[in-house]
Structures are given as C-alpha cells and as structure tokens.
Image 1 (cartoon, rainbow, N blue to C red):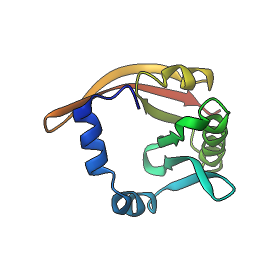
Image 2: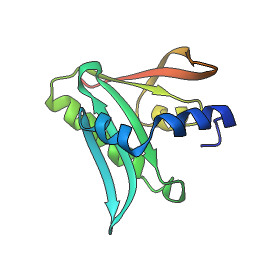
Image 3: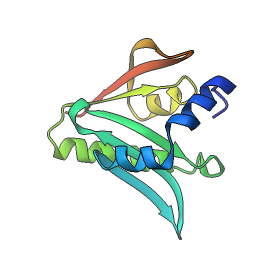
Image 4: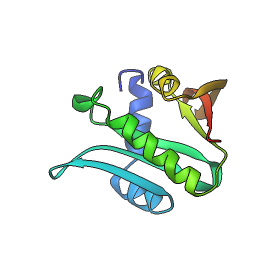
Length: 128
C-alpha cells in the first residue's frame, strides 16, 4: 500500500479492525480467494450502490490474476442481481488494473476523514 502516507495508513489501520470488517462484510456479497488454508485476496460487492469495494490482494501474490478473477466473479453476481453497471472508487495506483478490466474513468474525488484526506478516481463498467 505504498500509495498511502503514514497518516492515511494509521487512519486505515485504526478504522478497519477485524471486528469492523467482520460486521461490515456480513452486509455485502463477499468473495475470498484462498489457496490451501491461506487467504490471498478478498473483494466485496455493495449491492445497494452497485459498487465493488475492499479489493485486496496479498502483495506477494499480486500480478498472478487473483484480483481479476475476484472482479470477474463480483461482476457475474452483479449481473445476476440485474445491475446494469458496476462502480469502483480506485486509488491512483490500481487505476490501470481497473482500466484493463474494462472500467472507465468518470471523475476524481477527494474525501476528508478528520485530519486525513483520500483521493479517488471514480470508475464504472457497463454490464450490458
């Protein structure tokens, strides 16, 4: 997560505790990619917003196609749910990954959380 500053990382680590993730992930469609008994990746689909969020791949296994497989499966679920498009708020580093997956840039956005701000690229992909 080299794209984040130390204050941003501190905010994320403080917010996304295992307890928070367990509670939050129960509300959404979640995919976990495992090999053996090790989790290598995770991603979720926020049904009410048609948004893919929380796509994380173990850095050691990035570039092995895990992220692409997770996104493809999340898109399949979105289609089953009759969604016409899927959105993602991408940080700047993974923007090219999403472009390769067929997403297009819509806008840029900055979100402030207390003393910390995060810049995103809003992207979407039509599913029809």
